[in-house]
Amino acid sequence: MYWRYYHDPLGITRKLVAILSADVKDYTRLMSRDDVGTIRTLTAYKEAMDTLIRRYRGQVVDATGDNLLARFESVLDAHLLQRHLL
Image (cartoon, rainbow, N blue to C red):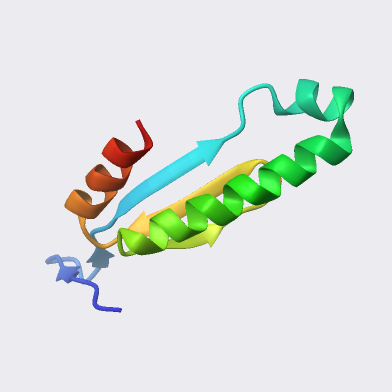
């Protein structure tokens, strides 16, 4: 994957990316009511999100618990995914 690197006068290398962070609303409440069903649904949603993120040239960085963190080398790709989700 190609990333743009920026070097500033202080010698710090920076990488410009767009970040997507998502989590499940009321996750604790859902787990307390039906943990098996919640995990089953969460797994299906994470698989669907992973497919969409890759379709828009992103990469899932972390998917712990009810959280999902993805990065995109292009702000436009991240924006197009966001429009798809809404």
